[in-house]
Image 1: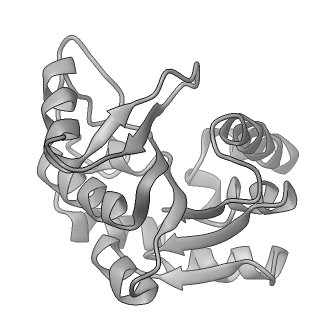
Image 2 (image 1 turned 135 degrees about the horizontal axis):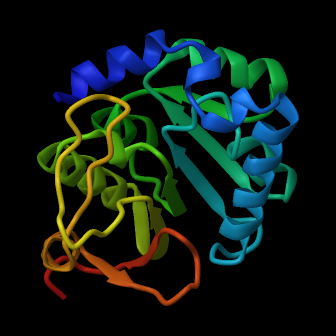
Length: 199
């Protein structure tokens, strides 16, 4: 599925369909975001400048900002960003796909970038493109947290709610090419330090 098709489907999604916990209750949905923000805080230095790529309506960005982080929330859907702003008007938002981050940041780089429940919906090629852009947005030595699950039988998603998985070899090769050094974190996502590509 192309990145454009994933973005279009996401933009039109009903709020109840974007996360399974929304079907349980709104409280469960927002509590899950708080729990994930707490997990991220265990890997990202306090008060860091953080970019949430694919922030949606702020399920994780809002509680992370409440923990004292300087969060920039990025999403391709203005509808999602509008919902975030209604709840947290002080969070900086940016409507952009991966290629729109660099023009916004200019020469600035983030201390940390995280991308949860986004890469799983994209093809391998689009994921690598996105991760490359996220690495460029991260300062050398900064932290990236990526939700790109491993599998013994990796496969690409065939719909926007499908799940793309990776082999260990695919991830290792991508990390070396892009400039990501794995960090042992105990988190359910991949945590990496931004290093020079190939180094």
